[in-house]
Length: 597
Image (cartoon, rainbow, N blue to C red):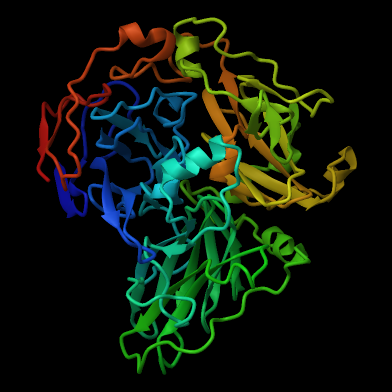
């Protein structure tokens, strides 16, 4: 059976297949997407600038799929520089080949296309994709990934009347290339020019602070109905506080885990994090209502313009929103409010998620830890005359050959397996040092933030349990404060300045997996590492999928690469893709499918 529907990215086909080879499961549908990644001109803050669009959309489209579906994304790079897309929160079980970061993939050259294929195996929740190279996310290129439950799995709340995706993030009028140049020259990025909400600037709530003529986001709702808001901080480096005037935010899910349902009047969402809330339209609609995302842990009198404002519009609204914005938390000098709020976010242990068994059935608190890594970041340092950031004194330097390809083709000297388990008392250095993870081991990672700003850490390929956080230096005694029962399982966690956050992760998926800070400036300057997970007993591709047929080669393997004739669209709105007998060797039954944009 073949079904397809029209989406904003062109035709999206969903295929139910009866016969497969390779990594897929019989009966799991396929969803196909065409992404033409190009520049367009937009004026989100009233000034024309170049942004990165997906098939001429900024932000990019939401990929709406269901647990266990196979996702095929044909990406055409119409930019003027190499490109990779990464799928934040998608675990790519046994398949780091699709992760879209430099440790696993060669970049897609300018004018080339490349097809990703991955399965959202045993996952539900709210995630997003973005370009992972060279601060490109600072220019856009991001979009949502919604993974719905299978119908046979109960959801721990009633079906919402609508599903709304909201991208929030700090924004600069300078291009990502200018921002990159500033970092290369040893400068800070400085204060952002504003906060965007779904790619748009602020509603003119203040005629002095907000210029006239800026396009703002309006979310239309019906009185009495309940909507699911999926909110993603896709920004550069600024933690944001989200709030909806006179409305409660009932937290329901974060990054693939159903949470204990609690009402918040506002919530801090740090760079790279995703949450979903249930919001009931229970007000009298005497006017429209503000939706606000404002900068946290800054001098608010100086950062007033760094505020995103959208409008919540009831169908029976009696007028425009006016007056002051709803107040943010008043804790600039006391960050315990934000930390206590983060600690309050816990797993709903009785609910099922991708599978019917309760989320609490994996009793992580009773599993013996086999490896411990304390990863400490510091303020930027000078290494070889350049400003860099570090983890445990090592500033990651990406090699020309992706780590996973170097292993596959036995290329020696590309990386070392000597990443220290603790910070060492030695001068900082550049390096390509990798954590040697133990397959089926249980790793404890402590992120120690000795910088002066919030850092958010993400791990590709996995969800980890956030078991503790506090101010000061982590010690062995800190384990006495851990939550060993219902700590939230997610893939991105905040670490407050002068504080630590501890996570536990079960290393059950083979591959090279990126652990990085999501703050684009410190990530660009070297604050990342990879965890190598190898099954020494498997030579049959049972625990890791084989190298894809369409793999790109570079670095020491560049001579293996067959050339493509550059065919970038130069900003065209769409293009025609031929999806043949599964470019990544999965489906045989369909000889060809043509998707017309």
